[in-house]
Length: 158
Image (cartoon, rainbow, N blue to C red):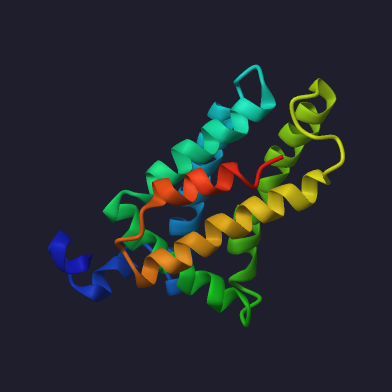
């Protein structure tokens, strides 16, 4: 990236004091973008429609080659957060957004559009696991089609 911007690798530290602060900035930007997608989708009147709309937008986002490259950094951050207390909050902030989706599942259950017998926390963890798993697989095989995963996810949602 530095080469494309015409900068030396060290020059980025004029704006960021450490590698961790760069990672934090990248994670914060991605989490903001994810939250915007989720909040936009959750404006739909029907919570089930809102969740499927979010997944449509999210998997379309994952089809973008630029996003695929950015997600590789995310995978490194996930791995680093397993051993670094400093990096863990950046990952946790993204995962914690799932609370909005769990609220939508609860609302859908109350409205009768989502099965009442499923645990909202478990449903959102399952959806997150599919998304994260796809991102990991896509990092090894960039030709994976996000649309096929998106359709398969429909069969898993209550």
